[in-house]
Length: 391
Ligand code: FAD
Image (cartoon, rainbow, N blue to C red):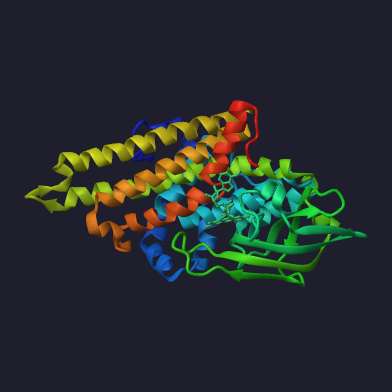
């Protein structure tokens, strides 16, 4: 039976139909039963739980958006709640899916030919093929739209790629990485499905992160990597096409950020009901209740925003600035919320075993990836004023 979350205060989950609620419960059970008991240890060791990939993807988390793979018709609100649900237990697992299904499969779905979709999406949905998405570079983060230095040069039936990428999630173990590179003939950004076994391709793990430690981010070097023309994303003609992918994934990150806030908030509520100070549970102190109420206000406002942005996707009215506003706003509210939740737990709020600490640290990565708050504000600012202020 469907059990709504107490932290879904306005009952947004009741917008789902029965089939969607059942699927959400399956994912909730998996995350609670299989991921929660082990994830702090993986986090501490900065290891990705590879042995969980198979069972995790059996919950269908990477299948829902695509006509080629979905088990049933479903709404964008449902898919958003799935992102939230994963992140509510662990933002690293949510990020693994965000890269595999959102960025990598999403690029193939949005920018690939039907043949490319048929070839890759089913294998990636099952985990037979793991994907990564390489846009950011050591010298080009926020200005990826124009600043990419990686080049693709046509050579007969192939392309030759040269350059480097930084921060690329899943890339230490991906089978294919989508590399975004500038065509040296027309200077436009194009996308390439690069097999990671290709000569000249190397990926090196970025160590010593303090957020999303299980997520394996890599520095990639491309040294004369040859990619056949059939592996070029057929409908990626300029950065405008890349941005179509980011519009979808930014909305998903907004949803995940609500999940991170909920995860920390739920830990704080449980703790406040147990911990006693001044002869009573800290949950009975007015100022602690105020902290929890502020958390719930942030969570509820952010969920409402995410629900509407997802409905706009299904209605066909969602634009870049809509998902940019949600990403910037919800990740900012998340950052406040995890800090308040941690605060409500005193010293134990900084210890992994009490859960809030992991959400507190992971929030920093969600805040910056998929466009920093500033970049998303500038996308919104352009829509408000009609003036681009990026440079
Ligand atoms: P910079 O662009 O150097 O920005 C630094 C600061 O300057 C920021 O505060 C920024 O907002 C500010 N700034 C820059 N320009 C302006 C301006 N014009 N106006 C005002 N402020 C400005 N990338 C991928 O391609 N694939 C991935 O899988 C991936 N995964 C990631 C996972 C993690 C954990 C992290 C941390 C990053 C990941 N990224 C990935 C990269 C991510 O998208 C970038 O880190 C992000 O876009 C910011 O770029 P940057 O780090 O180079 O920061």
